[in-house]
Length: 133
Image 1 (spheres, rainbow, N blue to C red):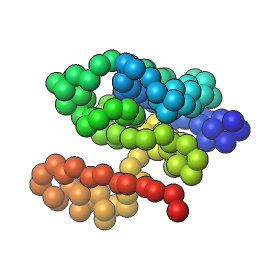
Image 2: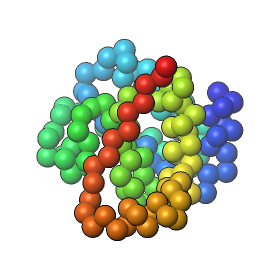
Image 3: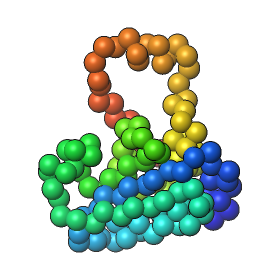
């Protein structure tokens, strides 16, 4: 996968991909895991940690995931990114960009947007839903 290798070349810092998947695999979770394994093989800076367990509400709440399968992207700190669904097809390029942003420690927000977020005064839960057209 040339696209994956090129997108992950020269990552600034290591990124851990935590994959929370049910203990009983489905065709979809097997395909998702295979894709994540391929992404991890493409860069020595990407580490895949597969957590294939029964649902544990306390553990999942501590990690901040609402359902499985779920993908958590983190560097040396947890930046709060949770990804649900297979990052394949149209979403692959965006997903690889998110890995790069986590590695570089950048949000992609403008200075004005970061100031606005900082002024909110409380934590917010934000979900972005993507559907290919």
